[in-house]
Length: 165
Image (tube, rainbow, N blue to C red):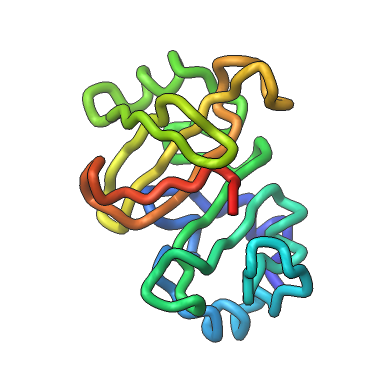
């Protein structure tokens, strides 16, 4: 099992959080203590983040990839995990613009629990997708409410979920 001290050293990057990379196989993540067999029937997930990850404000999703056993999304939904630039849940759009400049791209999305612009940064292993809060979110309006780490190298092929099934 991963410790709180280890998690504190992990950096959020496009398509990865520390040693966990989008595209990883569930069996490998289970062996490393990062994933467990899902006990919930919510969204038809077969696998879920271990309690140590979930308690740190992160989730793992295995549903849109080539196989239900391939990790397709790492979700950060609480402050704490951050990028090398210091961006985390509750950062502002101004923080994003200062940190990423011209690398920050915008994509209009309409998914189950989110409609509007998301802000995307691409890297070697995929993309960082930042969802800003609206008046329904627990995070103050206009601040990062959710970060998804996904595969994709262009705005056209980056998959976003926004927290729906």
